[in-house]
Length: 309
Picture: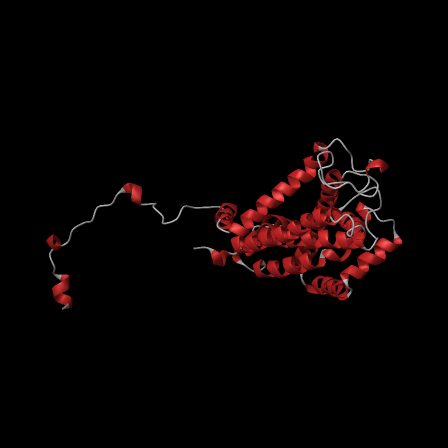
């Protein structure tokens, strides 16, 4: 059989032609990480709806107070507890202050505190977790003990104690949230970077003389950006809820400043006679909490490489 195959004439074979435009043809177009994630996120209707709602709330938080001729601290005792109407679109409170202006101004303040706390959590947590994972050894063990101590202390107790020692304000509330808020981010980033630490592209960078700082900021952190964004989306509603809780128990912002928590507290005190003072800020904070969590779930699925088809 082998001898017969070795003596087969060349005429029995034919060279198959090829087209130059099919040489580099691939089954799927090349997409960047963000483009691929955005395509998959658009397929999640709940996440896209939440993104639209959040965009509208943020837009009204920025321009809403300027749509009315009243400011958030302007009082008029002749117009107290007026129901929603043509002059005051969402009514007035016990001091005659316009609720439309106060609700959107309070939403802006609550979002500002939440975003600021989330950004500080990222800055501290990512740096701490990346340093611990990259350096390793005794430094990693020491940093892990610090994290374990902070985890053992209830977050809300630390926030309340700090607020009771200083004057409540935007900065003090934000700092109180950040004291232990960055710990979860640090743990997640540390675990993620440990997965990349001994991979080929990191070893190649080291062999080319890259410093730990360059490896961290040019290779490690960019590869954890999806994890960071997802965790940030969960941190923001948590910060909004914490601020609202502090304001509800009287440890939040003080008059005449308004936040969603302050407005809910004021509405709760007058809910029997002026229910509208409670329902509108409650709707806003509920929408924020639900939409941020739905968007975070959608981003988690979009960034997950296992979801790619």
